[in-house]
Every structure is written in C-alpha cells, then in structure tokens.
Image (cartoon, rainbow, N blue to C red; front, side, top):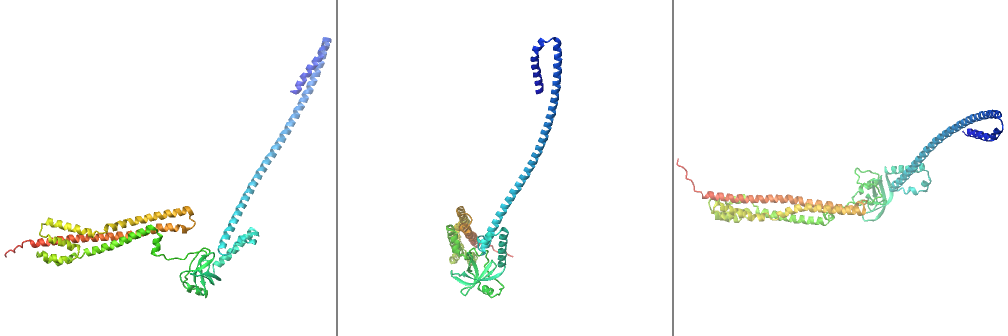
Length: 457
C-alpha cells in the first residue's frame, strides 16, 4: 500500500510538471508525450509490482523465519518449564529428606535421652556427658548404648554380690555384703544385722522390717533356700516406705472429725443396746413357769394365794397378771381394759432406747456419706493446687472419704440388726403378757361356773 501511494504522488507531481509543457505543445505532441509517459508509468508500475512481489516474498520469508524462531522459543520454553518442574520435584524431595533427617535426628536425640535416663537409674552415670560418646558418630553412639544395655541385661539376669553399705532399722549405716537378685530384690549380710533389703532412694538400701536373716545368710554361702523371703521392688533409685500396721485409732484418726462423731454415736448405740437387752431380759422371764405355778390356785378361785406367788416373780408378765388377779371379779370388758392399760404401762419400759437406736442406725450412713463428700472436696482442692503428680498428697482426702463411709456402715449395720431383734423380743414379751392375762381370766371364769351333775344311769 505504501508503494501505491508513492506511485500516485509521483504521478501527481509529474502531472504538475508537464502541465505548462502541455499548454505549449500541440495536441499531437501531447498525445505522444502522454503515451510515452503512460509507457513509463506502466514500466514503473511493473517495477513497483515486481518490487511489491519481492517484498511479499521477503515478508513471507521473514514471517516464516519468525514463526520458526517462535516455535524454537516455545519449544525451549517447554523444555525450561519441564526442567523447572524437575527442579521443583528435586527441591521437594530434598526438603522431605531434610525433614526426614531432622526427624531422625530428633528420634536419635530422644533415644539418647531415654537411654541416658534408663541407664542412669541402674548406675551407669550420665552417658551424654561422656566425651567419647559426644564425639562419636550416630552409629557409634547407638553401638555404645546397646553395649551398655547388653551389659545391664546380663547383670540384671544374674545373682551377684557387692561390698557396699546399707542402713539398719535404727538409721545406722553399716558395711556389709549386698547380694542382688537381678534388679528385683536384694539381701544384706553384716555382723550387725542381715536380711532382705528395701530401697532407701538414690541407690541406697535399708533393712526390711520383716525377718529374712536366714535367707540372706544362705544366699551368702551359695545355698539357695526352698523359700525366699524377699522384698520385691521396681527400682533401687526410688525409696520405699516400710509397711506399718495401722491401729484402730490410726484408722479413725485418718477419717477426721466426722469419723469421731460416728464412733461416738456407735458407742452410745452400743451402751443403749446393752441396757435395753438387760431391761428386756429382766422383763421377759418365762411366763409359762409362772402360769404353771398359779394355775391350781386360780382354778380353785384362790386369787390371794396366786397373787402372793406372782409377787415373787419379777417380770412384766407377772405385773400384768397381778393387775388381772386384783380385778378378776369384775366383768370381762372391764378386765380386758385393765389388761390393755397394764400392757401399755409396761410397753414404755420395754420400748426404752429402741427408737434412739434406730435413729443412730439411720444417721450413721448419712454421716459416712458426709465424710465421703468432705474428703472428696479436700482431694479436689489438693488436685487443683498441686496436680496429680504426688499420690501422697491425695491420700488424706481419700482416706477421709473411705474411712467415714466404712465406719458409718460398721455402726449402722449392727445397730439396725440388733435394734430390729430387740423390737421383736419386745413384741414377744407383750404377746406373752397378753396371753398370760387372758389365760388367767379364762381359768378363773371356768372355776366360777356351776358344776353340772352327772345324769343317772
């Protein structure tokens, strides 16, 4: 398009140049000149068209060259992208390897820490402070740890002796021979005292409270007894307190003030049970013997003689029968009212302390529950303040919680059983009083009936 524009501009310019000439020349000359110019222009057109074709070819060649270069660049870009992807993959793999190495390093350090703690408990010292250990490679360090572990296993799976020291029961430290049964038991042999040993902490031992001198001396002489009196422990580094037999006072004391209240109620209930048993035994003398003693007198209507005999018997049934004999001449309804009144009078003595005993039997478990709640509250207060790391801190509250419940049941169960048994005993005495009085009335009324003469044959 640029070449055509240039051609048109040239024609316009040439036309401008030839206009003055055209006005001078004749028409024939103008036609010849025009044809000549036209031929020149045609020649220029062909030249321009040829140049245009050449430019197109050159442009096509340039375009093809650019397309080829673009294709080469795109291919190179794809190669670079693939290379970048491979490099990223290698970077990820390298990062995973680094993470794995760091994890392995952490695992190794953890293994060293565990090995150091485990071996230190058995007297191997701080292996991490060993200069040779610290300067060694990881495989060498692991090899050293396994060597120590093998030595430890060999030692713990055998019986061996060492000259050492241990504590006696009075706290004195004596020299002697310690015989180890692996790492689960130990015996001490010394002129001062011998026997089984218990851990005293930090690798020291103390003489066990129970006698095992014969076992220790036999092992020292190389003789294995048929029965080993041993104190079994997990580690010699942890101190073990000797077992102490708790007395009843210690148990009550561990329950706190509520435990003492329960014990006091139990003592009161025990005293009342004994007193009520004495009352019931004195009031519940055998009614059958008394009836057998006065039966003949009542049957013969001799009420004064029967009354005198009843006065020698000290029982509730005797007093009811006496009231019945004094009013035997009255009508039946009146006598039954007197009997009921006498039985009610005796009942207040027979029921003495019974209700209070049952109240104690009902209240004691509730006091035990109160102690349990109080102890658990104390336990949770300790947990809140100190955590759960030391079980000894929790034992006080738990002891209060368990001991008070135990004491409450110990008081309530016997009080409930004995209270019900004595209530049944009291009811039997009341039944005996009523039966005795009614039998006396029936005998006396039978004696007052007129005799029916026998019919003649």
